[in-house]
Length: 113
Length: 226
Image (cartoon, rainbow over all chains, first blue to last red; front, side):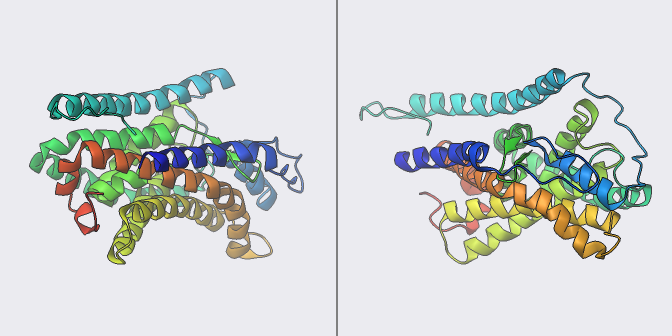
């Protein structure tokens, strides 16, 4: 079980890191400059819409836009931290509960895997 | 990656909102009823929601040279049924639309439909089908979360293709184009989401075996104790 958990984590990390080397630079849409590497898929879609329907104008703008890329990352990090915080609380609580309830006889370490 | 603010014509925006609202009401009711009957499930529901919050904030690089993020709603759909994840997905999307300029208020209905309705329902269906085949819990969880994630982005592609048909090839040509952007990017990310979901379900099986056994969905899986 433990070895498999390690294997799964390795696979997740590789799936995330490998594209950084092997991804091809995306082709430019006709009528617009080449998109930046590793931009969001939604900005890529925005360019595709520009190519399909050049006359389309977005009819509504976001009410609030993060004033800079840094602020946007701050807010995304905040969102991730909230999720990770709850999951961490649950894992910590579960490990503590398991330790307290476990029979003391077998000397076995409780690990969250 | 959701449909950007203002990028669906008003008729489409309204239509998707009208489709999504009944699901949202259904989800809220089913969630409230479930928690009232089983208050001990609150913790796991909180973890499933937190998982969706965490995963949809992570923009990961992909093979297409662009970035996208997983949705994280598959986990909750497997545990609590697909309807329970509609309100959760709605809150995540609302947060991102209001504070992050990611997605949008006018496209909220369409994005709720793809991420909070199609994703969870497909995940749930795939999970039930694989469990019925008698495969292991890990296989069922992985495939369900992975396919549900892909289904979300295929839906996004279809929604955009419908709104912006190609002048020459029509909706299908447009769909191929948008799917090339969204679904292809999503492939490795969907696999990662499937694997992460397996890890969380394994942890739940270890720490919350009792609660997990009482969930109606998990009763369909053979070898639940493993």
